Amino acid sequence: MRSWWWIAVAAFAAAGVLAAIPQRAFDRFADGSLPVLWHRPGRVDSLTAAVDRLDGLVLRGRLEKVDWSPGTISVELAEPGGGGDGSAIQDVYALAYTFLVDAEGVDRARIDLIDASGRVVRTYTADRPALDHGPPPGTDAVPAFVQHRFHQQ
Image (cartoon, rainbow, N blue to C red):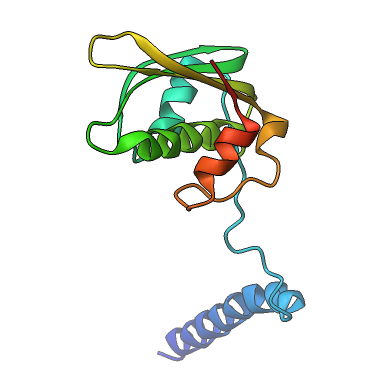
């Protein structure tokens, strides 16, 4: 009976020591500098990775085609119906931001806006430096930024 008592005491002591280790390891971050959620851009190095980056991106227009070549992403985007030109520009910026700011491995984005018949209405191109100090997607500053910093055809 006494042997079980010592085993129980040893188990509680071991649990206490193990529970104290993580706390001591994180004590050096007491000033709040602990990187709990660290955003690391995903690498886009294939068409599959490019499509994965688009997962969860909310757009007003419909994606028609996505093409990837090393360093360049090309997207055909159907113009959003009823949203006007402002929602199309918001979509263009969201796509460019997703690949040029939030991802690695893409240096240039080309977004073709197409109409209902499949004809290219407008083409926007941007490279990584064009989005330096850009506004967050979805803000009122996006249309002016796109007009100023993106190449349009």
